[in-house]
Image (tube, rainbow, N blue to C red; front, side, top):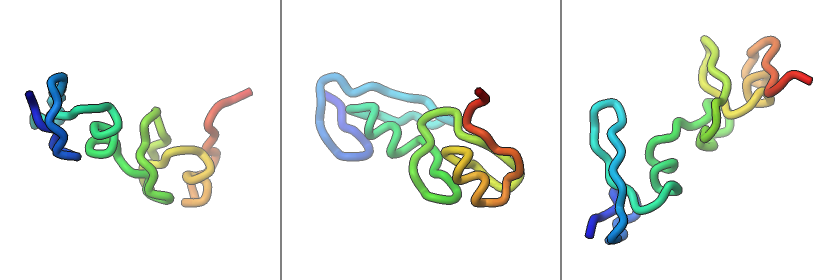
Amino acid sequence: MGTCIVCGNEYAQVFDVVFKGQLYSFDSFECAIHRLAPPCDRCGCRIVGHGIESASGLFCCAHCARHAGVQGAVDHAA
């Protein structure tokens, strides 16, 4: 049995992740995302996909990046 560092759940199938040289144990991807995924600098939601990185910050989507003043930010091109 292992223990999730986020929720404290004891679980037989806890998995470990090494991130930036530190070992973390989780019982679900949900807890791993909660702990490791960076927050959007505008809305605070966790960035699970690629996000948008600029000199002014890290954003979950083009909408948030544009609101923060990033010029030409798009989620995808048609």
